[in-house]
Length: 66
Image: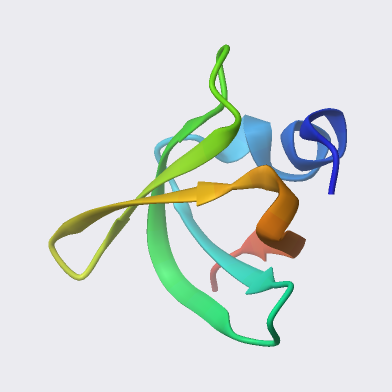
């Protein structure tokens, strides 16, 4: 997915809980979106007490967690 598409999908959700579907079929559910880009080609997530960086190219879908 392009940088523009990912930012369009979830850029406004920075600081909130999100779910991501990844290109390999896996998901990252109910994580905090710390940062969506800002010059870096990755999403910065906080998942179960750990910082995780996911390249935009690995994301197929994203939405706000319930």
